[in-house]
Length: 43
Length: 274
Image 1 (spheres, helix red, strand yellow):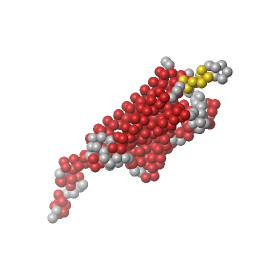
Image 2 (cartoon, chains in turn red, cyan):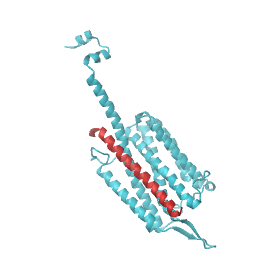
Image 3 (cartoon, each protein chain N blue to C red):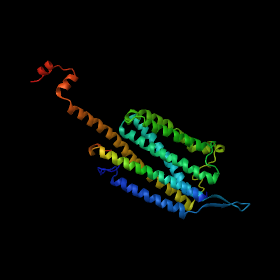
Image 4 (cartoon, one colour):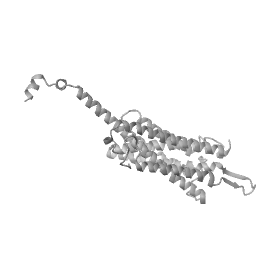
């Protein structure tokens, strides 16, 4: 593999992991918001 | 934590959506800077004239170094919040400690992975078990993975918050070892001493690295904000579920059953009633 190949792998893995984590947080937030009445969501 | 105007269906607020958009745009700009505007690291050997250096692999450092610094910041925030848990014992500090620990652990894992991928072309090895910085970082990752595992041993976070706070404060003691390992054990690591401290880089390379710090600062801020809100909702959902269950049980239970449950006889109940 060339230097550029390693580079793409490093950036690709990082962006996929961070994006996947962010997506998971948003989705979990949505499902929890449906369970909790609005007056209990006053962080 | 920001934003009073959250919608019923999600954890986003106007502020967090703006922050998310700015963080995403910064990531795109960082990618352009790292891939297209900065050059590869190529130097000429003073005697042989042969080319050497990191070549294109240097572009990985615009990702790896900011993630490492923001990992430190997340874990230090976790330690501060853990002190808050032990001193003030309020849910806010506990949710903050859990949120920063989780975001920091994700970053720590990525730091290990990107460092390993960078090391293969530059150091000709994926991993070096004798490298002090690699090992102290791996220990840090495992300590905080243990912290997160401890927090998952019960569905109610309140049952573990003080134990978890103590674990976080012990785990964070590894951070000075990670950070100073290249100075304290100079001969036992492949890592060089801090490039920034010795001002070995300049111009666009330095700007791109600084922009990387800013970008990942925004990304970590957004992730922590979202994780905090999810953690807060998890607690609220438990409280709401318990409250609903008690209310439902009360509505099912007749007054006679309640009297029997608390040991009041029919005669006593008759005397008590007007």
